Image (cartoon, rainbow, N blue to C red; front, side, top):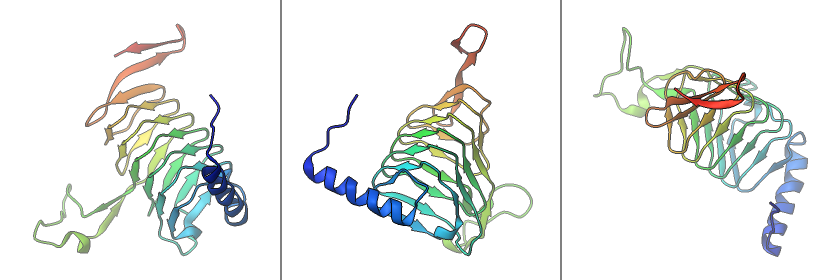
Length: 193
């Protein structure tokens, strides 16, 4: 399928491409507008393509926290918060309106927990790395929470909330996301769980 841009969209894309080559030389195309807080924390992005209105919240100060593998493509309005580590593997495809975060305002399990009487923005930031494998496809409106590892070859269905690890080559959907199929390499088929 071939993209056919209007003339004005072509000019906007050309403008974004020129800025990409100046500001993010290893990326393929960073569409505008694009928001990044703490650019020095962006570790790798070879061949990265983004949609419009993407936002990366990073700590800065040359502390590397956001890693993209080669040739990742992300849609419009993708928001990634990476204060400890978010690592996304090679050849990942993300639809639009996705939220990925390795951070929570407050602690809600274990020994010392945050109190509901505390102002949420004053609660301590709790971080746990998010790891996304190679060849992962993430659908529209997905939310991936802190501490989650998603294996290679996974598919995450639209509107899912991923709050636990997913094994390689699985399809997960729902709130919370649960595995509904796994790929069988012997039969070359996705099989229901």
